[in-house]
Length: 128
Image (cartoon, rainbow, N blue to C red):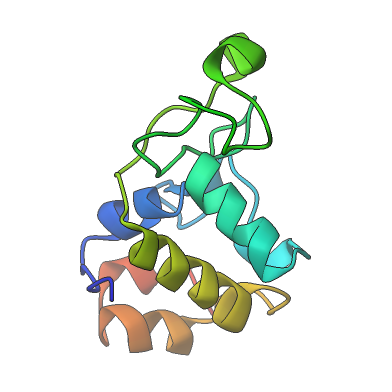
């Protein structure tokens, strides 16, 4: 299981979401707005999204055809940056979390933020 880190940047980067100083997703879509099945979410977490800011989290991504059936040569300059390398069970845990707790949900509220980061955490000041 992946441990929670109270540092917003570390948790946000793990999922490929950059959070700016007002708590908004900078350059990446919200995971709450996606409509993908578990296998598709896992592939996005594992392989990133070519041509976007979503990084790959598989240390062997694009070394063979495990990612969208493409190698580095196939994806070219659209190849996602490498994020933190995750083990298969960590990829599973992140994917299950996205599908079970984020996907299709409304925007984050201040109480949800404080439940995660702790009451009074400055990260939550911009939520209602």
